[in-house]
Length: 80
Image (cartoon, rainbow, N blue to C red):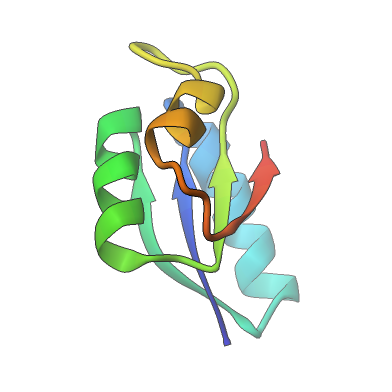
């Protein structure tokens, strides 16, 4: 089982991946969905996911800023 989280500043950016993962990726377990970069960072530290679906452009900070603050990166990233 792959534990994943989704981080995206827009609701539609969260709904589509969640639906597609549910339909086509039975081995991916979504452990959380986060609408702000800070919530996502907190979840990365707490959940310790295997995979992060990450928006590049978000309010407050970019996806690249999230990765920099999450260092060391111990998970795979898919930019959405």
